[in-house]
Every structure is written in structure tokens, then in C-alpha cells.
Image (tube, rainbow, N blue to C red; front, side):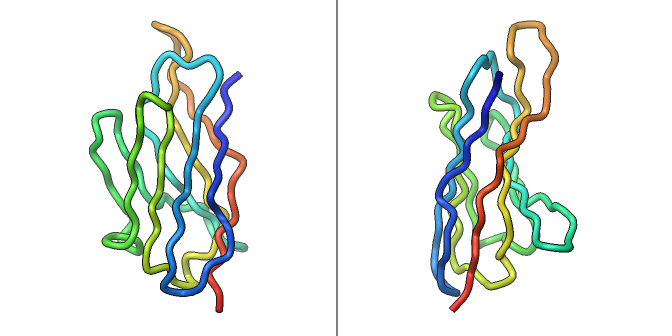
Length: 121
């Protein structure tokens, strides 16, 4: 009973900005890495950005310098600030988190339902 709920997607003009949020809720003991993935129609899902529990980050080359991932551990929430958006950024964005639901329990991969980001004039 873990849920990841994304918000913040929508339609934006090229060069614009969006901030995505993903809040994890339910039975959660700890969250390790969190990340954002995206998938455009007909394409493979790709990692956009990831962040460890300690705050280390990595980004896809295509978004480096434009996107920033961050997290608020107290809120079990991860964010993706997207600036200088391009039409190529259009995709469904999915939140991912590696979650342990109880002490000593297994760490599992959880996914949000996805939020649409469309970059268009």
C-alpha cells in the first residue's frame, strides 16, 4: 500500500518551465533513491534524473543544465524543476522510488501513474 502521486505536468511553451512533484504515501519505512523517468510515444522509457537519499544526483545528458532534481525527505517528496523546455521534452513523466516498507523488509521499486508534459507553441 504505497502510492506515488505526480503533479505539475501540463502544456508549456518552448523555453518555459514546469515543476513536477511526486509524493510517496502509505506504509513507508525508508526511501532510498528516487528518480524521474519519461517516455514519449513509440520510444523507450528513459531515466531523466535520479537522486539518492543523501542528495547525490545524476541526469540524462539531454537535460543536464536545464533540469534539477531535489527531494524533501520529511515529506517523502521528489521534485523535478524543468527549465528551458524543448519540444523534445514532451513525454509522460513517471516518478520512481526505491522503498522499504518496514525495518528489515525488502526494498522495492514503486512507480507513479505518470503526468503528461507537453512542450509546444
